[in-house]
Image (tube, rainbow, N blue to C red; front, side, top):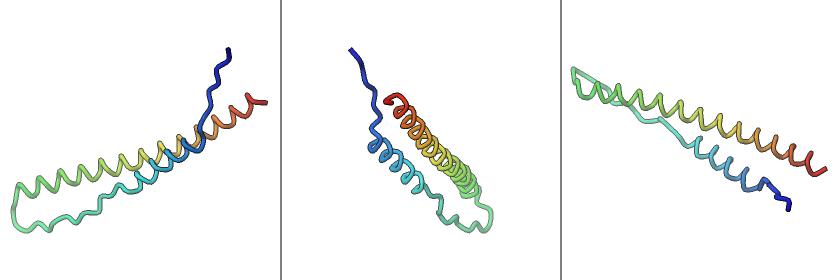
Length: 86
């Protein structure tokens, strides 16, 4: 009894494209308030916000890299599948 493993190329690519589009939606475009005077709580908030902004930008880059790697893997798997079928 032979088992067949087959890549659903359309479904796979659709999900990778959805991941890529979701990654593009990650944004950090929020206006920081202008701090005047000495407000320790607001300064801590802005500091934490900047850290979160950096974290989101790093996450966005990783999502984009993952999408590209998955597309490359799909291409490699499709090629390997075509070589096996021959």
